[in-house]
Image (cartoon, rainbow, N blue to C red; front, side, top):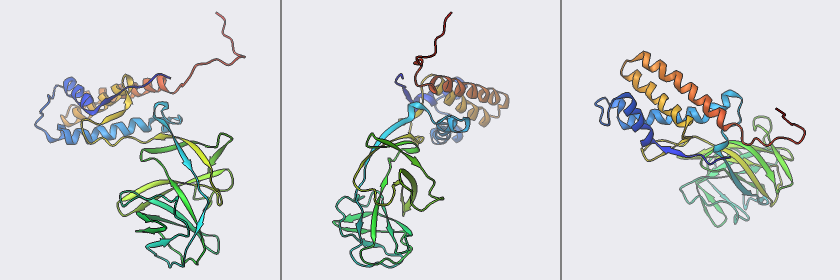
Length: 290
């Protein structure tokens, strides 16, 4: 697959202003950078999500990979009460240390086999602090299982592979608290101002290496130096036409806005025509003769 090229927000907005004639210093605040960048963010997100409403499993140019190294569970060192804000582990060596600028997470298994999910903001040796989410009291030596934070640009999961041997399959966490063998679940957790998506593996997963493929989410567009997620060509044209639609609506030019909307839809379809096919290698049993 060819390598896509992505323009900056400045390139998009400069082209939009040139094609609509509003100039680089419009008097209307709706056409100045703050409002235009906000609308461009929404248009970029629409472009990123376009495949999902059309039966396509994400844009091929937004697929990324990650590695997760799982660890054996540990246990509680002492009892904790419901609402505990600090958890002491018997061994916390391989638990993440967010250092107060990110979020880590775990679950504790109760004596009735309920999974009690908690998140935390800091770790000191074997102590997790700024913990939220503990709903049950837990006894000494209750099992504590790490769950694994996914990348900050994570959007949707594609595949999870177990040490090059087999594939793990997604199971919605609304169906079971914990996934069964050869399955995984995703858990979204928030702690004060920090949040993250975590991968949950079956109980007793132990120390293993997993590779996962995912489709990244839309980039947050807040500055003219930010790059958009739609590639140059039809993808970039989609963003330009969607932004022109916005500008024409602000100016009260409804006919021009409608035309820009039609052009945007055509451009995103052309983008799909190009990027939904990753390869064109024929299978050995298909031959075309002319």
